[in-house]
Picture 1 (spheres, one colour):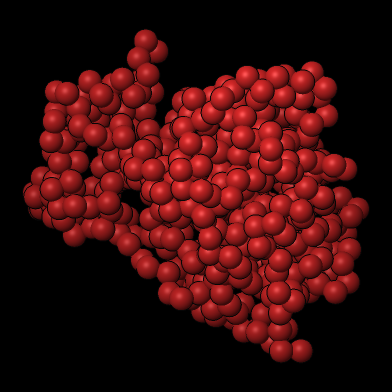
Picture 2 (cartoon, rainbow, N blue to C red):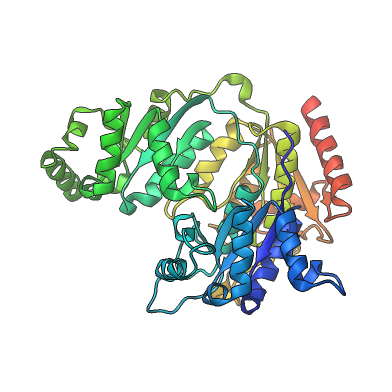
Length: 469
């Protein structure tokens, strides 16, 4: 399935150009065409007319929101034109707002003053690239991937069971709910959960209502806070009205704390609206989370057929080193081999979870080939908080180190180092002992345009030849 290529117009105020230029560079590396005034307005052209034409001829409009953007008439006019021409709007926070005002308040007030350009933007799912407000997925790297997926969706694995599973939870259980939803998604379930299912620029309220209207199954994360939540109560009300199968699940945080368990049961007994949960089977981590997950997957019809096993291509990469190019490689492999076959993910495991166990299951059960994406800083990158310490690769909990070491230990896997642009294979002395075998492996190169197409074609040929043996 061919990934649709779209042109994105970036509307921004010049005070925010530094972050805009970073986004432009990363999006271009991802193969996304970007219209940017400093590059696309030619000598002798009218800046205003060229900008308006750029908006009309683009598929999407990225509104880089900041106090300066909201107060600038030219920025507002650009957004107005994008809305008139029914362009997909991707609102992103790119500038810090006054400390006495939350961004939402600024957007609401600006919408009251500028009805046609700004009003209603606050109802869309907004990504925070400033790092100040926590909207979207948190870090720049996670938000960038979230944005790319909205601009240029990559086909997902066809679900084993197309019946939509709605996740209801309290904010106190966010880490557990996301972990469980991702595991159900990896098992090729059809998942709806707010943190993962809202697309950038989508009206979050309408998306939530649509999820509740169309869901076939309802998972509720049990905790005292969830039972007290009016929002959870309303979601459960809709599930009961629609007579959906309800699956109460529980995190280890609750199950292993007697005080919280007592609080949960007491709160549940006192809730007229949620007391029905007392009569249902609870999915609890006894003896552990994995056993609960296995039980839940069977209940919702997610037992994977044998013919999907041992075909997988696992992509290991470091966000800060090679995110944009790794994402583009992933898209091309999905186009050629199908979404069921290609796996790429990083740091979606909440703190405290066993990363090695989480991914070794996929490597053991499904993978045949592991691609190690290596950029210029892959072996030398350090944590920002400790720039004088050891590189991340030498830290025992580093996810890339764990992935590569796990893959090298499994003799049935074919491990292929992929060197990006002018990156060299790390020397043995640069690597921890568990990775010493890596430099002995034959590597392939993938460069940026104009060489990307020929390089990815060669990589695909290598993978095909391995799969045929």
